[in-house]
Image 1: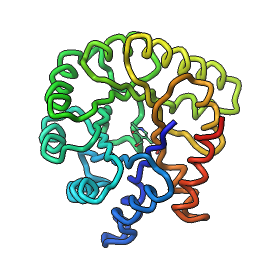
Image 2: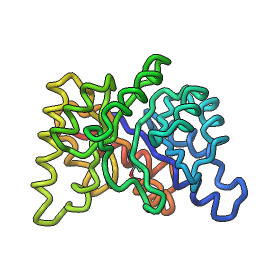
Image 3: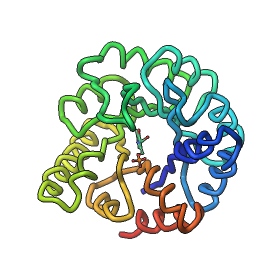
Image 4: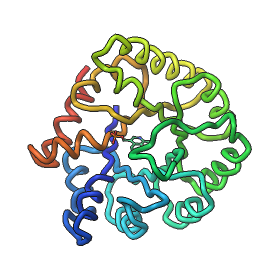
Length: 238
Ligand code: PXP
């Protein structure tokens, strides 16, 4: 499995004082050096962490791949088509939420999703839809032309070590197998950490895990390079 490191919260820390420290591009290069297969950033509508300029700078300095998470809006489509990241992950977005709360409702917004995916893929950008492990959503996603889905692991992560862990885990596993049977490639992310990530090995053929908060938290104690290396080791362990 590949590790995509989400560096949004490096920007959160920087923005706390409004200056340039810690430097986002430098942090991305450290993640790459430590073995990240790509860097993920979420350009939110309210620009609470990542700013437009950050996305442009990351695109120019990265040696690996930039995965741009974004809401399904005209503004974000324009930005993505100009910046041309390697991949876009389409997420739902609510202004008041602390982080992305649920998956995209592709069933409800099927036409909109179809029309959003097409120009991105026509430009050569890989498109992934961030969805809950739900069969109806997966089936709809498979008809949008998107090559990837990213399974929302938030509910599994919250249930980890509780009586609901197995139920939430099985939902993810069945969803991944179903999506793959429809020809979709499957990534996963949200809430994954050093304790729960090992269960992702039990899901066949996952391609990439996108992990942010837990790595940046760990970096406070051991440094960013070490935090990424530690996570990568857990992901590579069989
Ligand atoms: N994947 C997606 C689509 C997300 O929105 C996020 C959070 O920005 C992540 C992965 C990473 O989640 P976490 O920060 O909890 O690791």
